[in-house]
Length: 493
Ligand SMILES: Cc1cc2nc3c(=O)[nH]c(=O)nc-3n(C[C@H](O)[C@H](O)[C@H](O)COP(=O)(O)OP(=O)(O)OC[C@H]3O[C@@H](n4cnc5c(N)ncnc54)[C@H](O)[C@@H]3O)c2cc1C
Image (cartoon, rainbow, N blue to C red; front, side, top):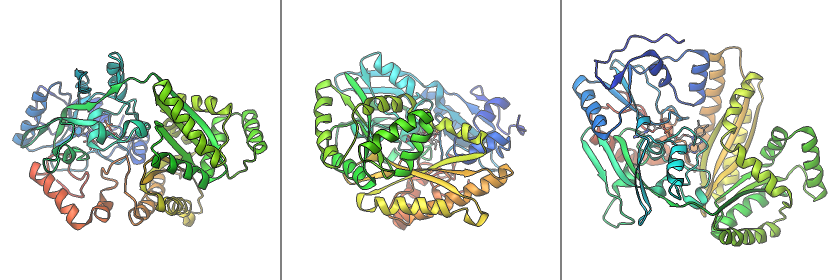
């Protein structure tokens, strides 16, 4: 067990200062977090954890924080991969507010299809409670098992089926945020031209403006049918063009993902036995696809009729660009669907072999996708050259839009002799590639948010005036930097 210093927090009936609670809330899921948890070197811990059950209790905790001058970190599922919920060295005590007990469907307005949830409700509980009533939210980030509806909104998350359901920004309708300045009620209105939208302003604030306690989301009737399929394109350009045409022609698929040739090869190797690999490889070569082939994963979600129409439209585009699917399509699609939330656990498996793995992601216009992907891959591949180390890299487009796509790159590198040295390798890889992203007409994050790890790169993306607006907003709600300082903005308490 890591050594946990004595708590600096004053006593309060809602605050727990037991070591286990503090250890469990000390780190998220970023690579450095993961190394810290493996090594036992956590660095810093919250001084206590509170598990409020009502908005009134959150208000009480915020008032207590002002009264006793301590810092508050709002905590959803703790799945941040960008250092959002990690306490930093501070002369002030730190309280983590875990929203996990506010996990109920509080209301479902079937006429307007608006569901109200406690902000700490995690993915499976969101869907179980809605599907019991015949509805779905359809938000499936890869962290779905643990991440919460409040965390999704606070960090502008995107689910795998964003092509049908949209990002969390499209789903979030309104709700309640408890702030240090009072309760902010965010009205739920279908559409409005009444000036800047407060709902929009609160999204992506990463716990800096207040704590969401109740959130209203736009839900839909649960689909009649959902299918996932896989096919193969002759090369990257063909795969990318299919994705662009699907998005721009608004073909109603629920998801489409394009793996580059390196990822296609890696998945075929990782996901099949040698016998299966040889069979697949032989079949695709027979159909004229060589090592340049790229895997396309896609899904349809809706009524059987809608799905049939969508697949017919897609088939035309696939045919035009040389796609090969056939009997493989459904089998491989079903395999993908079964493993869709399991990929992250690969980190444990490769670690046992002495290999570390992490991901980087961004989004950019179609005209910049190739350049950006190539820059990211080359930077990663070369980042450890001075240490004589190779880095294995591959990429897919994970979310597609009419304007562009998100680029999701996975990289593997050898662990060094110590945790510290492995962390140094990761820092090199991360910082060099983030620099390339920031300078490359792309966003520093499409779906993982800013946290502490990406705050440095925000000014390039937002500009001087843009940053001033964000800082002013945060300062207005929290002049004393009490809520999650250092996250989103590079500031200290
Ligand atoms: C394996 C893995 C896969 C992932 N895949 C995806 C993916 O596909 N798509 C995606 O979008 N993200 C993904 N992520 C990133 C992460 O899951 C998202 O950022 C998610 O939205 C975080 O939700 P959470 O509830 O875990 O929030 P936390 O990690 O607990 O917190 C994230 C931020 O939100 C704030 N916050 C949390 N709850 C509240 C609240 N109620 N009120 C105010 N602020 C709050 C926190 O202070 C913090 O700044 C992945 C993460 C992992 C580990």
